[in-house]
Image (cartoon, rainbow, N blue to C red):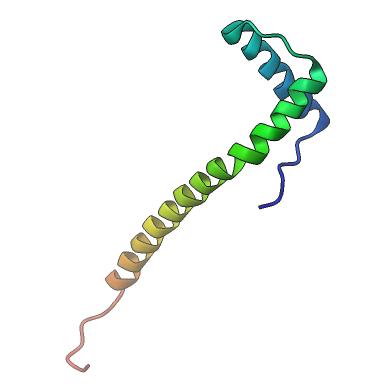
Length: 83
């Protein structure tokens, strides 16, 4: 899995959100660079967990669609006395 490549604006917004959360929930203030470093660490450590969950969810959707397609194709078969 390649690292998440956020736009500069998205990265700054996410770091600011982390700063706000830390201040509001833990009464702990950090600077912008610290917030970006924390964002990098969270992405590296937790990103694969979320990625794998997304892959599993996609796999389930594809399996369900494949089953629907199989049923649709089966319904197209015609009766025959020959095998």
